[in-house]
Each structure stands twice: as structure tokens, then as C-alpha cells.
Length: 156
Image 1 (cartoon, helix red, strand yellow):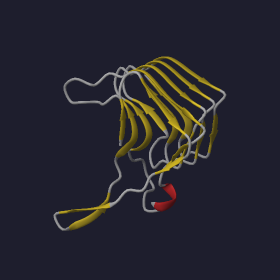
Image 2: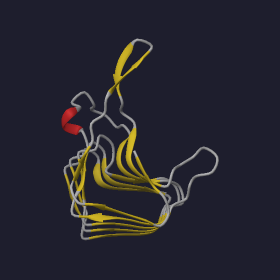
Image 3: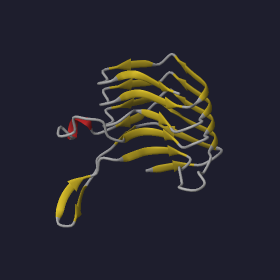
Image 4: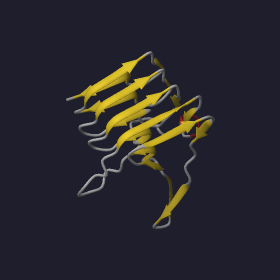
């Protein structure tokens, strides 16, 4: 996981490909299914690290592991980009997000003033974008292709 804090610009020039490893717990081997690849802020248990003024841009993108995980057939939390609670002034542009085992881009509660522009979303098991209790969100010139549950999920 890559955590982005306030006043950060991340430029993705190539493709970031995700591959999780097996874990052994109590003698049982399992594969990790819950992760966030890039986190804007961090949702700590008592005080979230609120991130402000974060840009993710470039000509590259994130490729999840849908093709490597045929055993996963239902929702899980393999998220490409996740906004922690109360993230503000966020720009995501000119990248691609694909093949996440959860949702390509997801926000927790109360993200505000988020612009998602010229982003290609494809082939994830859940949604392209899922936004919960957020406001002042702009999604423009984006493409959505091949999602099990839909390209865009807006929740109150």
C-alpha cells in the first residue's frame, strides 16, 4: 500500500501491477484478499489522517489481479485507489484503473471536492467508482467497461 498525505502529487508513468502473496495463519495457507493499493490519507481507528490537495496523474495506471485470482467470485476489498474519510481537494486524471478484485476507486465517508477526469475504468469484480456520503464530486470524460455490478455506485 502506498499512502499519500496532504499536498502530494503522484505521477504514474508506467503500469503498477498488483500481486498478493499467500499467508500462513495457524498452519493454513490463504491468499490476501483485502487491500488498498493507493490510499489518500489513512483511516485510523480514532483520528483519520485527513488528506488535502492530492493529485494522482500521469500516463500510466494500476492493474489489479483479477486474472490471477479465479477463485474470487464475489465482492472483496481489493481497491485500486481509496480515499480515507474527509479527504478534500483531490484530483485523479489521465490514468487507467483496471482488474481490481474489488472496486477501482472508492471513497470512505465525506470526501469533498474531488475531480476524476480522463480516467479509464475497466474489468473489476465490483465497481469502477464507489462513493459514499461524499459531496462536490466531478466525474468527466471517463470511460467504464466490464464490471460485475456497474460502473458507478453512489451511496448516501
